[in-house]
Each structure stands twice: as structure tokens, then as C-alpha cells.
Image (cartoon, rainbow, N blue to C red; front, side):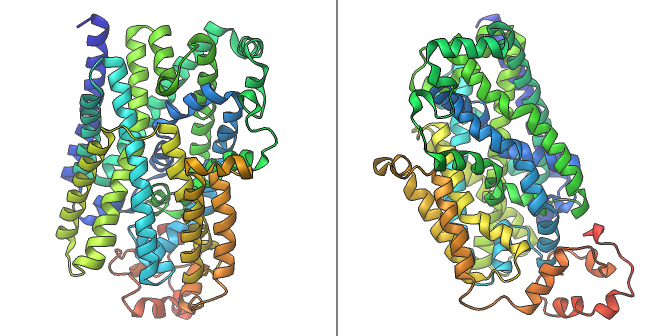
Length: 535
């Protein structure tokens, strides 16, 4: 083993050991299912911002995004343009309101939240099936990214890299639950930004800055620097451009593993600080991976197929000293882990809370739910490793496919839950089914619907799911007065009885019949001094 390889191994082992320690630490400090599944709703602004953004980014930012830019040129920056404002839209529109309403409804799962906001077994069934299928696709993309990264730099077989990298993720999520995920995301976010800025600065110096980059790209092929993609492949297709911008600008609001961060916030009023922190973090990170893909076209020409996903790794290996190259490796692993852990956590939550406790054993106590959720995380992790070993499609395609289907399915339901009192079960179910189906059909390779229609798959799904929500809500059972009252209360400052504010989710669940009547006793509430910040 060369000294370079030894140093890379040491740094990676130290990093992975640290992540596993965090899992063990929170295993000892987690006492119940609410703490395990949602951190006991005690996550502050800084940790919320970091876990929100690192969860959103994934290995896509180090592998999929740069690879697509290497292939398509400047066109791919449309994704970065939308992503730059994603935190503002996500937290600004959903954060405070979703935190309050989820508390009022007594929810610890984003799928449970949808069912209680849009009452009916069909809501949970449809939402659960869509979430489990497409979040699983996201998990596969991260496990595949982890394997490719370790295999490339450490010179080990891909199957060994997938097992080792994915095994660490599964362990600390299984052990420490949501708090382990949140705190590992915090440290991973710092590593991600630092390593990405490091390779960016060195690469820029090598290529002569943006001027040198653009001059070199123009000499190679002027269309690379154009807005329509290399070879003008997307010429005039404004629907594709709109989809590329919107998928990350508003799409995060449709991802269950992202919106659950709103539910876990310590207070609705940390949302403002969360937006500020997340937006600053975004600007430090979002555009760099795509620009690195452009620099790779010049510095490492001739990459084909799957090798394009390794462009950032190859730049680091070529331009940086051994220790710094290893830090970039850890940065990539951080991006991968910070998304995979959130998705694994959500899978455990959904399978334990939404499937087992809802349909199999409604009488399950807290210890049983905790045990089942952990078991589900382990099973999903093992199955994902096995499937990743057969190498599904590339990271970019897998992420965009899963992201588009999830976003098109859930975005209208999550947004309308707190912004439109008349949104009902019929509209939500229609929106989820039609939005997901449209985005999925658009992604079928043989149909080439993106090229034929000029519409990005996410945009196509969204222009179907939004009208479906509006039109569908005109039919079926109208939203109850009790639910409309709760939405109103979630949307503004109000005084909440102290006993209610301190209750846990079981005590305030809608099934506990007297709660809604109690909330409507405005005369009593006006006599009780308790700020809404507490909930």
C-alpha cells in the first residue's frame, strides 16, 4: 500500500469512526419513539438549517451534477439557479406553519401528517406507496455514490466499497435515530462546503479563472457556454428550462425526507434564522459543483459514460496533495451520507409508524414502535446494499427521476395543507396519483416525452398535480370546520393553553376527541398567557 493510499484510508476511517460514535452517543440518550423518530422536536435553528440543506444536496452535488455539466455544459446551471433560492421557498412557505400544524395534529411522520390533514385511509395508502418506492430509489443513488467514491480513490472492488460505505450509514442511523442524523448532517455540512471550496479554488487557479474557463470552452465548442446545452440540444425548449429551475426551487417542498425537518424544529419561530443560515450555506456551495464539471471538460477531457461522475474525484486526485485529496473524499462521503441517512430514517419512520402501527399492530406501545422502526431501518439498508451491487442507472438520472416523482406527487399537498383551508382528501389523492404518474411516465426512456413536448419531467408532473389538487378539492367531503380552525391557528400567532403546549403527540392526537373542542374555547384561551413560540 502506497503512502498516499494509507493516508486516505486513515482519514476516511477516522471520519467514519466519528459518524458511528455519534450514533452510539444518541443511542444512549434517546428514550422514546418520538425522540428516535423526530428528535423530540428539539432541533434548533442552526442544526435545522444544516440538516435541511445537507439532506437536500446528496452525492448528486459531487457526482451527478458535475457529470451532467460535463456532458451538457452551461445549461445545467439552470438547476443551480433554482437551487440557490430553494431554502428560502422551502422554509419560508412551509417551515413555521407546518411545524405548528403537525404539532396540533400530533404527527411524527410526514405521511401521517398528510393523512390527518386529509383524513382517509386512501391518503395514507397512496402517499405511503409513492414515498416508499421513490425514496428507496434515492437511497440506491446514495449507496451507489458511496461505493463509486471509495472504490475509485481507495482502489478496492466496488462491491466491497458499497458494503463498507453503506454499512456505516445504516449503523449510525439504526443506533441513534433522528438526533444522530441531525448531528452527523451538521458536521457533514461543514466538511462538504470546506472540501468543495478547496477543490474549486485550486482548479480555478489552474485554469485561469472564469475568463480562462470560458475562453477554453468557447474554443472547444461555443455551444458549451450557451444556455441551450452542448450542441443546442435543448434549443427553444423553455419547458425544460422551467423544470430545471423549479425542480430545486420549489421541489424540496414535496420531499418527505426534507419536510420532516420542519416538523422537528424546536419552535416555529426559529424558521427565520433557519432561512438565513440555509441560504448563506447554499450560496457557498450550490454553484461550485456545476462549475467544477465545466473545468473538468478542459482539465480532464475525454471522460465517457460512468467515468463522468468521477470528474470531481479526478480533479482532486490530480491537483491536490494527498491529505487534501483525502479531505475531498471525505466531503463527498459526507454529501452522500447526509442524504442517505435522512432517507433511511424516514423509511424506518414510515414502515414503523405508518405501516406497522397503523395496519398491523395498532396497540403497539412505545417500546415496540421503537424496536420495529430500528428493525425496518436495518432491513431497508441491507436490501438497498444488495440492489446497489447490481448497479442501477447513473446517479444523476436516479436522483432526478426520484426527485421529480416525489416533488410532483407531494408538493401541492404539503403546500395546500397550510395555505388553503379548502384543500380536501379528494384533491390531495388526485394530485398525488396524477402528479407522480405524469412525472414517472415522462421519465420512460423509450417515449422521449421531454424531447417531444419540451417539458421537463418535474414540470410536466407539476402542471398536472396542481390543477388536480384545485379541481379535486371541489368534490368529495369538504374540509371539516375543526380542520379549518386548526389551519387558521397554525397560520398566525396565538395563545395556547400551557397544558396543551407541553403535551406529547399522543396526548394531542386528533383521536383524543376533546382537544379540538378545547381549542375552540377562545374565551378560555384568551385568559391563558402562553406564547405560540413554545409550539
